[in-house]
Image (cartoon, rainbow, N blue to C red; front, side):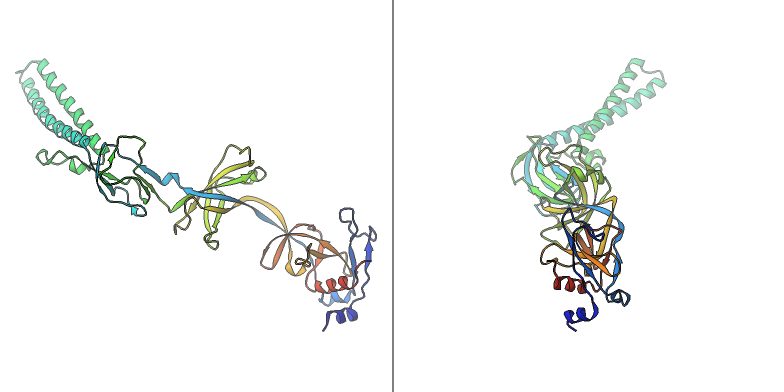
Length: 384
């Protein structure tokens, strides 16, 4: 049935200019919206439904922009502890490596010297041990002077110290302990040094080439290895939002490349200084990146789900009119027969309801189902 016909049958409409009369609201000092009066039977029959504005406590979320970067707790810059020439390259950019895996082989004279010193220390300790054992036996038999015994003891202690020093040096260069603890006659001087990966991860940068001399510059970086399963996201938080942000708050991250893919993480650092230009504070979140879609350097949208809460007003979407033509509005019920048009500012939508940022209070009642009848009546009888 045509709406105008239904209104003609069912409604008695009186449109009044509302200038502070009859207890109608005053909208910022200007005339309020028109009052619409209806037959009380429309509410009683359920053709027009009146509902209170819903108020609920909702966790506050702070949305901001940020940038992804390496998780520096799982990042390694690899350099050579020895001077030498690269003779073999075994890991390339983009490859996944495990801790202890050989990255490059370096021919190093320094390693040859360290290896030779270790073998000599092993032999010296063996000789010093024999001499010390013999001196103990002779001292017990009173066949040697105390002074000679003490010299044998000192030589033995010194030989032990030299062996520990040379062994630790080789271990620090990555030589396996099993290669050092075998029989003396199986040891040999070695000059090839295997530079290995210090962590599990992905080779994200390689600057070494075959035949290159390395190790002369302490700042020289041959490889950068990063575990990309977790990344850091650094975001800017405005001063007004800072009281709501705490370490441990959950963060949702989205990228322009995969807007449907939401990554999660938690804030682990809140900055201590304010940027004088943007008036923001840096916060950092560690984000799970198991699928490795998030790339270091990507710009992201980050939503911080804070532990703070605020009262949020929501209304059914069916109660809202005028969204496509200007200022949205609803019909606020003065009683079961009188309504007034109330402009509102809306927020996010979810599950058939929409948040009201401004224009209503928790004590208001509004027309929901059937409010289209009120709109038609108001449109049919505009204020003069």
